[in-house]
Amino acid sequence: MSTQASKAAAFRALHERPGAFIIPNPWDAGTAKLLASLGFEALATTSLGLANSLGRPDGAGVVSRLEVLENCRVIAEATDLPVNADLENGYAHEPRAAAEMIRLAANAGVVGGSIEDATGDPANPIYDFQLAVERVHAAVEVARSLPIPFMLTARAENLLHGRHDLDDTIRRLQAFEKAGADVLYAPGVRDLATIRGVVSGVTRPVNVVMSAADPSITAEQLAGVGVKRISVGGALSRLALAAFLGGAREMKDKGGFTWMRDTVASKELKAIFTR
Image (cartoon, rainbow, N blue to C red; front, side, top):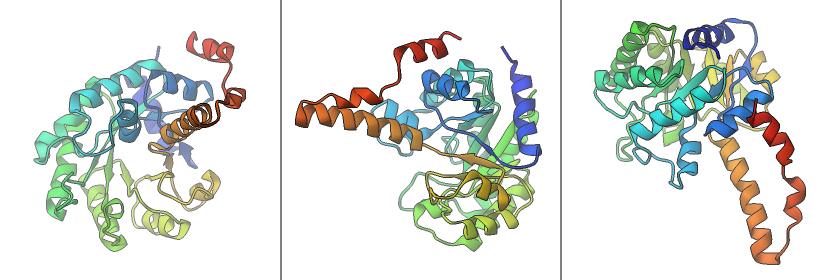
């Protein structure tokens, strides 16, 4: 098994080499092993995928901090791949309290993680600019204090919360970069022109999540505008559940079982899960 230090070094190297890489989002050990078997080089947790697996709606505070950390541990231990964690807003508003989530996640085995500027409060969804920057700065301090080269991602959440102000979003990313974030991320960008604008506004690696972008965009096109890391959020979870519901509805509505033709062979799963 790879050590956490070697995973951290490999993860940092992915961000330093030319081109872009895809970092898909499993939600448990099984899906992590399946993605590793296909040759992906890193994995990322998903808050939506975890909430789905627990039968809960995605949202701030719906899944507990302890549940998130346990999911980090399970996925980090499932394969030799480096894992980046979706840590939402750090489960705290005060900068140092939120930053402690970085240390806890690293202790759970992940080698990267994100902190976002979304408050979880629908009435006031985004932290004020200065507080958002202070939170990233505190998270950077914790990340730098760790015994591994932890990759900290800072997220500007405006576009996911009805604040379609790209200038403010880029301003926040620039401030997060100045505060020391390793990777920058503005979920909600949809088209290549907007993505190019975000990338050109900063100098650190940029993550784009395709669950919110035009799905016709390819990894090659994203690399062409300077994107470094491509994730899919909870989209693979929703894809799996769509297939599950399709089969279940065929049984319920038609008494049919043709969906079995699309299932993966037990032999193939056994081979992957016993490696």
